[in-house]
Length: 516
Image (cartoon, rainbow, N blue to C red; front, side):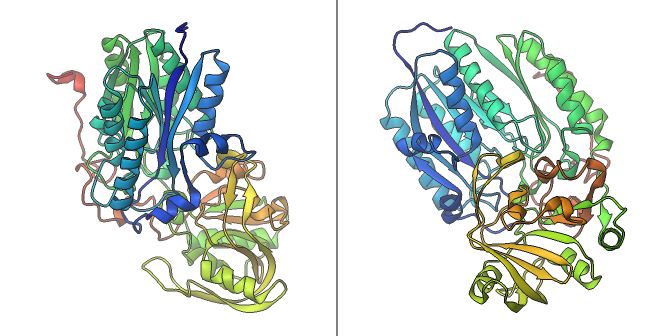
């Protein structure tokens, strides 16, 4: 461990956005609503009971404090948005400039920790994460360690690899290991301070797996990640198998294998090639099967009528705000209402106008609830039904499970509406329904529900697993911006042919090429 007398000055930066190319542009307000902190405000937020910034920052700082290393945090800028469309280029450029200014003015640093999502695009730049890492490297120079953590839905470019020393991705989906990966980043930096020289092998395959096939408890992706961890030797520093985010629609889309070794490039290349070959051999497993709406509705009706049936949770995977969905498609809701399903909890439907109308009407009032009254889009169709306002909230809660445990969350003005046998949580600020507190803040007993419907792709599994075993999870096939049925989208930039969109896609192992 380093015994240098002067404290190690480590810059802290972060920018999180997962960009869906088919969703509306993500403007500055989206970042300001969720998290935008600069300078000492970053450290002050870490001292709060429920920080608003990504969990990685607190995980990194706590680990550095526990390692016995004299160090000084140098807070720069940390910002994050809910998953959305491409970042507005003007805001991205301004943020990049502010990070560069503050990092430059901070003076020499001994290391950099960057908490990124890695799946961001901008309205002009196709690789803003690469832009960020390149900026950092340009300011601090080639000799300063730069370590970044990434979501496992990151889209990896060569620039991202070339301008960092180590990239560390999550290993869990639902994501519950953000702090652990940041702690790993801290340990890597300290090891580099003691002279360790990381070297990296990077392979990207033509596989753009549907999001619902990327769980890490079991399935093909779990098998790859577990194999990579089990195959690590003392020479290997980190193994990251990064699935990517197909809806970003980028030339750099594709399942990526990043293996970093301790000064042994041959070891890194050998393991990276081994994992990549395994991924390609199992590519046919990256295909999804969903439940059609009619079958799901029939199950919900039966659940309400027969107490002996196990309760179920339905995932509206095609309208996941955690992947850029708007949280306001009505296909499943209207079908359940038409079928007079009973014992249903539904959340969260994002509709600021309807939440406002419910607050104006007041608790106990009956109103004609018009979902998407402010305007229809291709997926956000209008739906109208008589409803009773049975709960009102400011939408502020502290997450208690899974992705957001211990984090401050804000749905904005929210209401609980009762539509016959369905109770619908309506919110203002876009959030995927991965947190049971979104129901429980209204006093609802999730365990008593017969059917729960969540607008979420997969993170709900970590939030609701105390109520629903995996065999009682139903992934429903409906239209939406995050449908796992990739053939429904017109992709313009994916590296074609690519599997599973192109069943005849081919790939050649890099070990067979002249540059490997």
